[in-house]
Image 1 (cartoon, one colour):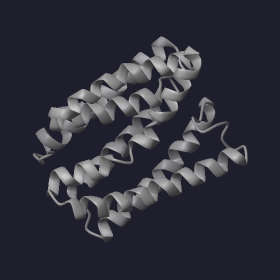
Image 2 (tube, helix red, strand yellow):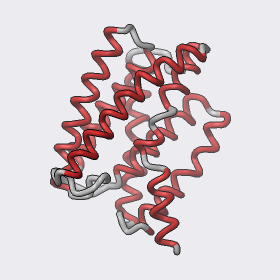
Image 3 (cartoon, helix red, strand yellow):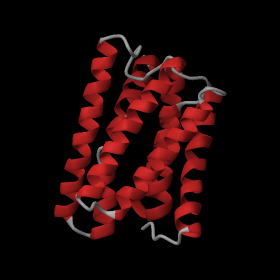
Image 4 (cartoon, one colour):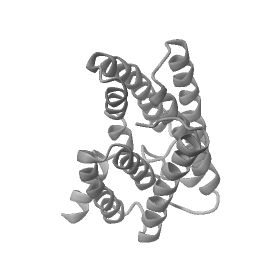
Length: 199
């Protein structure tokens, strides 16, 4: 029963699903316009849906082992695919003059992909936990308030990845550490070095 609860929790709190509301929250916070937030959320959702469909098709054709991309040797190809979609997303943001906050978020995605691509050849860390931690930690630090409540999800997701037998304790902890380091580096780059407002 615990294993089933862990698998369901891991599925529900998949980074892919949790990315869906992020553009809305970021754009709404930056612009104060619900209309603009919905518009950019739909734009972002189109890219997420297309990425999801492509990954699903690649799993069906056995290019990827599963939707979690569990096999370490397949992850560089997944990161390459994500990078291509991120470049397409960037071009769309640039062409349609997207909000600065989405460019900054996309920079975080590119930086994360670089870090993950480098680290996966050296250590095994939970990318699930790293992604969720980076997202929640960033929102909590930047906006505080109700976003601080989301911090409780990080250990829940770590627990679910361990009990679903996807990762060890060490891999979950490594993912959590990576998920904290990435936003801290991004904050230093954008806020301190480039003096760009992040909130």
